[in-house]
Length: 257
Image 1 (cartoon, one colour):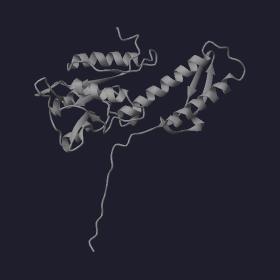
Image 2 (spheres, helix red, strand yellow):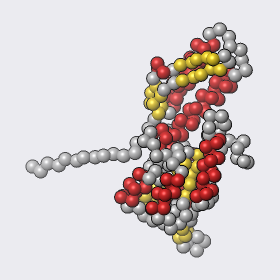
Image 3 (tube, rainbow, N blue to C red):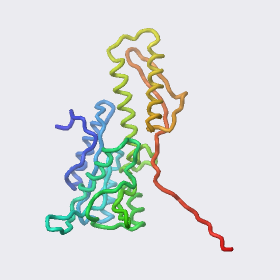
Image 4 (cartoon, rainbow, N blue to C red):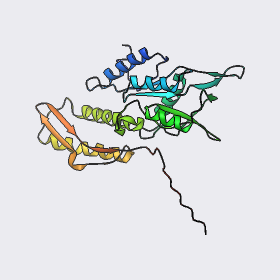
């Protein structure tokens, strides 16, 4: 309730309890709807010693675009130098910090997290299993460190605008940008003759700005529409959001001569 009037982008629940996660998700869903328009998302972390099967089950319980579940738990050195397992919300907070500190179109994929170790080193097959369960895994890479394999949300959709953290974030930022611009400039002013054309031109300009910023790779000109019903104006457009590079599939052919 205290967070409802606040401008919050990300929430890291300092708990591994699924019941609390569900309450956080309810809050985020409520605040991010079209009426409240205070879009936010959560970054979750499981308890130490949680099996892959239980991680999959936890992810399946909240299959939402506005949630991310991080794994595994990190190791942190204590005052005597011993590496101690910390709850997964430490890892979730690290991912959230990277996400919050970079441009919207930048994925968290392959970004490094700074810890003293991982509770579990996942092998390739386990990583694939976790990604298929819409869980965001961290891997250990020799001579590199610990990096985020892919910034996936908990959404089970094949639509990358929902299942990729960076693309989902872009949707929020572009929507908020348009709302702020048009409300600030036009709400409370008279509907003078030709106002629809002026609004249309401004909408085109804003969309072109998205492309210049690297938020979209293109847009459909014919999709841009401004319509009016009494005192309400409806704006529509269709764009191509900037997607992350997640994989390379390499085939090498060698010939002996």
